[in-house]
Length: 114
Image (cartoon, rainbow, N blue to C red; front, side):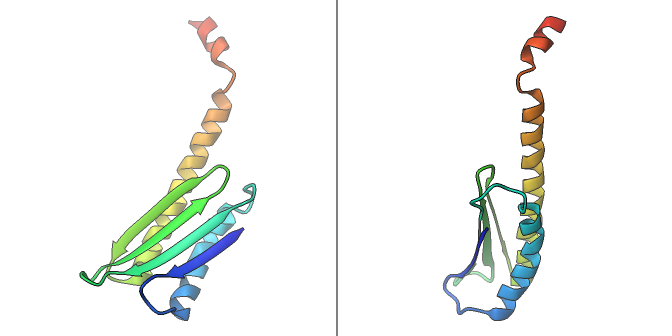
């Protein structure tokens, strides 16, 4: 599993990176049984015009290709929001994949019942 934290337009902050790594553990644990390669990219980008900062999280693997981003005034609150949304999206995508596997190959049986 490849995990990368990027700061664009600001200096590297050890405190923000440690907080983000701690929060990312939920996503990493969810993806622990996923086939490799799994890429997790977290990007921080401040706004020069507004008082909002952009945090973007990308998860790419053989089954998932999901992007979650959010703008907020506080980096810590924005990190929480992005990771919560990503965790929810991963669960929803996993449910869709499981439902697709359950119905695959059974169409003929359903046609006969009609």
